Image 1 (cartoon, rainbow, N blue to C red):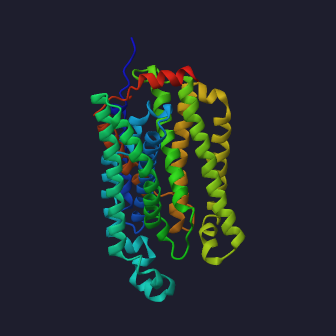
Image 2 (cartoon, rainbow, N blue to C red):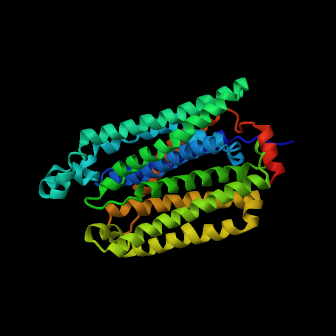
Image 3 (cartoon, rainbow, N blue to C red):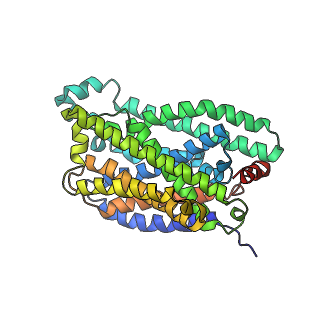
Length: 386
């Protein structure tokens, strides 16, 4: 007798456990001044994963790729309106501690820095909060519209809802990239006094897409022999998703190296500081470790046909890529405030606490609809052409 996949139950249990352990670890760091930095790291990882899920939802509805039908529920739950709303609420501790995170919010520092004074027309508390809030509202609308129209199509069988999703997502994908670029600039890049990069936004966007694909692949790999995934997890599906992960892995490496190469070639002090912080002491070894664990290992694994043919191996690689994204986010965010590589209990606590809430919301949304949206003719066609 075929077992039924209870992904929602597993994530709800994991979410509660993560939240309890995370709250205990995070409480240890609340007495110190660095707690907000730990919170920011944990928050940004789950925000980037959420936006990665939403981006892949829009990409699926635009391209109508066969690979998306078995996993679109996962992306909807991870990047749906509830997850976006929670991420928006998650900015409250950040807003309450702006001067501790952003140089432009520290009046004493701005008074001594002509460059920050020049940027003050754009980087000021009121305008910053308004931009961030508007970004979350627009992203929530994108998520809610696609989710509602997919359910309408399933309920009515009317293909016009699918065409509406395609038209909406194709236009929305362009605005999505622009909005997310501004959001990542406001939340992440503006923490640097003078440094900026035109690659920063898409760098984090690719990171989120990789994390979302890793999450979906881990779920498929561990649940492949349970209903309803036992009907859709076929070699053509794992091959397509594996190739997508391979493509995004190469894109992540390209953006990471391009950003470094351009800054190194320019050799301007206001730009080189970003990588100087991340190449000093033990940060140097983490940077080099990320090259190996974040690119070479997944690249070689995903090149192997067996990885994309055996669901258990495929799921393991997906989970591995998701974990590496957390380490990657640590490398991107924490050196801004911490000049020596060190991991505090509050760092792990924040990651688990925010993640626990995220997993509980993810599980709640998964319960509201079937795990697989059945487009049997298209899935059959994909299997026949695999």
